[in-house]
Length: 397
Image 1 (cartoon, one colour):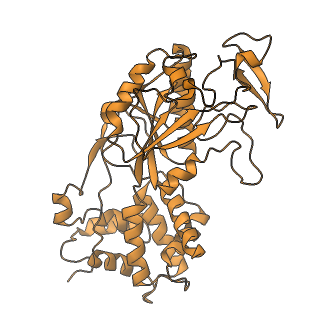
Image 2 (image 1 turned 135 degrees about the vertical axis):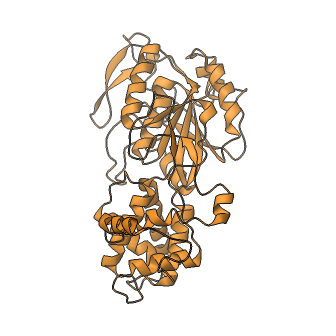
């Protein structure tokens, strides 16, 4: 019987090609083609969907993506995982040692996300993840359990809808955005497609620094230089007073569909700093205690706790809060989408500027008919973050 098993046949030329690809000879890519008939019948053998390729290449125009075939899944049955283990155990000791593990992890991450750049710390974290009993080596049980956990739970993750600031003052109040009610209705039409829904809301104190009435001598919508408490100077738009805490203007629009399971995060609570993004405020400093950006709302951590990999941003306004939320989502390691027909902008000019920024940050701009994608696309950054969290959780027990 062939080492590869009866269902995994390849030509000599293909075998030679695999050996040239690396120490494991493209093992994971090869096994991706050895999907069980049951998996194929369920539609798991391959998937065609419109999305940006993992190599970062831009396809067609903004808001549309070419048809591309996602990586095929290899079988996680005992026999297939035994073959993977034996191939990784190059010294034939019955264990995967640290050096052998590094080679296996590089190949595995390449299979998950070819665009991801592997670091030495990733290799250490992967080894600790696979070494489930903590004895400094990976046995067959460690390998089998870890592979199944990694490739079923941490390869794809969950999808989440982030509804940004669909509040009365933005839809029909003091800072009304043209077409805001359309954004509400279009958001309602897609929210049922998402398991996880998060809502942000501006929740300003009355003495907020962004309010025109609190800055004598300024004009509405004027840009001024604002000095933050840490000495940083930022551009600040002088807005009409809006979304003041515990006022009707700060309430979500009554037509917006919400549920008890939705998670609401407030932003803009600091009177001295404005906050467009649902992730951070507008300062760019680092909190020395946490090592994170100042004004962290906690959204990133909550998304990770829910095993979220992909986020879809909608709401008001496209050129400010929605756009910066989508950008920060990408910078935090999530695959980030902005659903354009579920958002509206304050001004056409600032919308075009925001679109350019979003494209530069790798945010995908799509129509609601494409949301969500058939399933999350593999994401190396998400996988490694999930691995680290699993190791930390295990260590805390």
